[in-house]
Image (tube, rainbow, N blue to C red; front, side, top):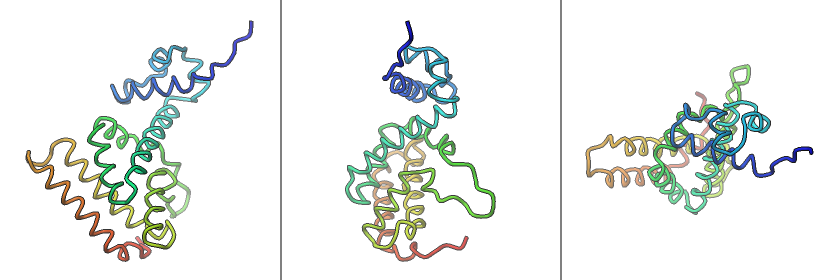
Length: 198
């Protein structure tokens, strides 16, 4: 009797890989462990994902999609900024794992001096550029520098909050400083819309 493809297997594999990755990081994510956790076998996993790196990329895209969903709840850029930090603080291990492996989302560097735009490997970055263009005018590409500045402020804030790098009791002050910085960047948006030569 011929085998019938399991239509739910890819979802189960991704669920299992995501759970293993969140619990044990990259070292916990072997194809055999994923297959076992998904109730399948290793060859079936390899039929859906060519290798472990391909599977990790799928997990990273899933995390990026969840972050995007949380961004969209924010409605405004300021709300998106708050949602970004709240999401990282709710799932700190996943946040740190994501950024320690996010380079795997990047396409290979082109030959020549020109770099690929960040949005090519970070769809949420492109979403932020689009939101800035909607709010401030111009095209998304006009707001790359501003989007980078906002990302730097938010990621820096998260990385101070997660390992508790600031003195205890100052978390609210840091969050407030972050909000002020985001607002200042938005208020001075024209500085960041200029093309950067470097």
